[in-house]
Length: 487
Image (tube, rainbow, N blue to C red; front, side, top):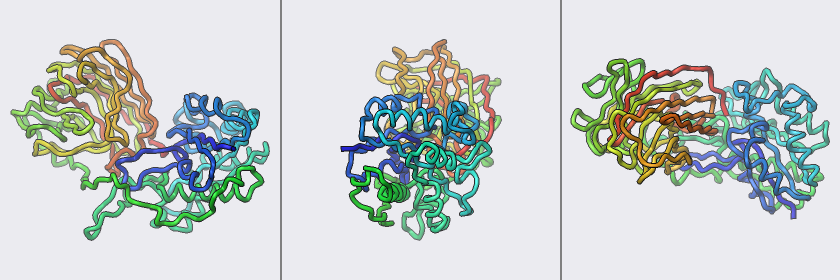
């Protein structure tokens, strides 16, 4: 029996959005509604046709494809990212222009599949949601470097490869619905209370990624196109029923909490928290004690350095409760940046669940007046985190209740006097993280941070520390590097 393998970007891939109101779904996850075959979805968020070649999944797919299988190829969204040399491919060049979009799609995917007796299927990218409901330019993947939909369609004609125009199909669907009704076709991060009823918050819409309903519609478009083709795959279609709007459900794991963007214009300095250069001292989360002058928490600027952390064993960084002290800065969500600092660990009690570093996160709060508030949200940290007897470099929490520790292990706990050089760089939904600890450097690239926030307008960067750790942050540099492109 034939099988379907999928390669592509986040619009194809699988997600696990435990915190979204309407979670993201790639259309690859809904194809099983229509096809009675094994389906293997190897798509990866944030990748382009070029960058995917560097992934282990690329090798896995071509090692496992066999004669009679089908390879669905769904790229385009990230090939357009002309500010990222790792992902960018030109859509206005021909198939024989090495490194172009058409060249890579054909020689690295379609032709390799054909040589194995596998049938390639080219898929043009789904549109991005357009509030004006006009669907021009970047919304339909037309950029100064080419029309990426047209490039795929032309390649299909030139090389006689079956092609499905999802750009036109999704554009026509969303235009017919109108912007307001199109919202439910897309992922939404947040809910809101309206007349006492929990409903979706339109301000939290993800313009690039589909909801379950949106992905279901795309899967239908694919099945319908296959049914009208001469491909052998059509005999495995089990239904062509159009998706019902009832298919869309609120995420049962979603927990509503009212969130208000902090108004730092009302911030008041104190002897243990103050502000400098748009960084504001604050502490929030499961702090164990009220953050006052006796709690041990400190986040302030003095003598040309930032002093951040907690002198006592209060707060923590773990899977169920974060309690952190920060010097935090608000950043427009549409901007790219580089954030770096030199850190000397001034105090540590050598306890597990202690941490220190730089953080990029999706929410922020003024200094709270209680000792405990649930503040579990998504973040990426260029930081050190201690466990029972080890220290990990670089940690994150993205769409999960668990902290993800990278396999960068340091034996034992960090010590007083240890030195860190830290950097976080944002480039759209891609985030590059560096940690240099006592001369040893660790690196990690995160590819899916575009809509990991609960604040509709801002993301936040901070210098932070907790649980018996205090750091001295100097040479702090924050620089906006340009506009962030959508996923």
